[in-house]
Length: 117
Length: 105
Image (tube, rainbow over all chains, first blue to last red; front, side, top):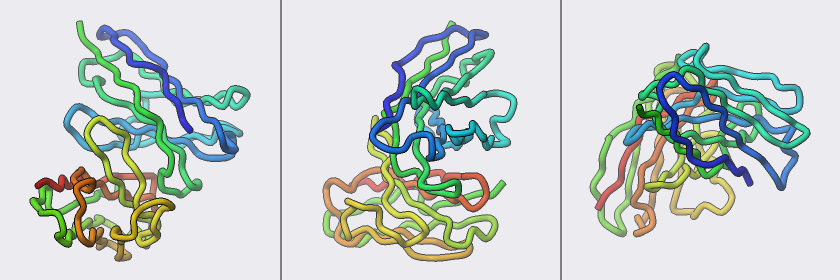
C-alpha cells in the first residue's frame, strides 16, 4: 500500500513537503508518480521517480515548480512545493507505476493541500 | 506534449445499459493507454492497461479496445457501482490524462 502524509493548510509564499510511504512490495524498484487534482478538475501527472537511484522524470507543465525526491531506506518518496500560491490548492496523489513506461496500479489516499491567507 | 481528448464529457445512463467512452490522442501512442475510474473523494482506480488488459480484480463487464490514436472503454450492463468519472491516460511519452467522462444516472 501507499500511505500519504496528512492534510496541510499553508499560507501563500510558504513551502511544503508531502510524503508517500510504500509497503508490501519491492518499493525501491518501482517507479512512483505524483498526480495533482485541483478542486473539481481532472488528473495531472507531475512527475515520477525511481526510488532505487532517484532517477526522475518531470512533467514540462510542472518543471521548476516542484521537486520530487526519495529515501529508499524508509520506502518514502516526497513532493516539495515551493512558494505556494492559492492555485496550488489541490489533492495530491502518489501512485505506483507498473513499469518505467507503465500505468498507475496502486494509489495513495491523497493529501489535500489548502493554500490560503 | 500528447493531448488526450475524451468524449462525451458527461453521459447519462441507466442500470443495465451498455456504455461507451471514447479517447483520442493527438499523436500515436500505440497501445500505451490506460483507463481509470474515480469516485467522489476517492483515489482513482486502474481498470484497463495497455489498451485492452483488464486489471486484476476488475469486473469483466469493463473492456478496452483501440490502438494508435483512438481508444474505447466499454461497460457492458452498467451497475449502480459504476456511476463515476472515468479517465484515459497515455503513457507512451511521459503521461497525460484525458479531461474525464462522468457517467451519471
